[in-house]
Image 1 (cartoon, rainbow, N blue to C red):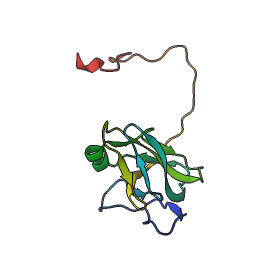
Image 2: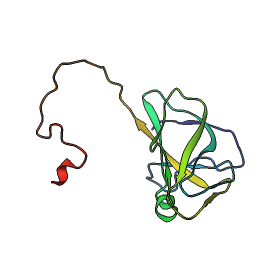
Image 3: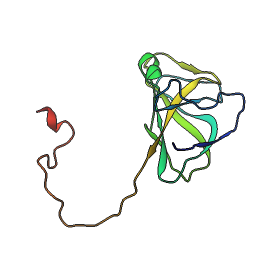
Length: 144
């Protein structure tokens, strides 16, 4: 099991944690009260700094309930937290609802952070790539 070191910047909000046994994402919480008007985006601080081990990265994911019920997403989903980053973790939330303003209260769950093993790659410049059945098909090409 990997250890994630967490520094709480605001001790009045919950410690990041898994809601259920077996969950992939740690719940993160807002440190501020604010509102997101329709189609507005804001950087919401989660009140933590983290030390992610080398060879791993953190990925901020939207909460499915907020996405489904309120139209709340993350602009750069998933938000990437590299292992060398030591600043405050923030989520760039967006309100996709065309009519309703979304209110965030301090201590509300705002997103999830998934810690995943990553691999670095060597870059090899080539003149030609190997051919596949798919070739250059993309952007809906399998829906013919």
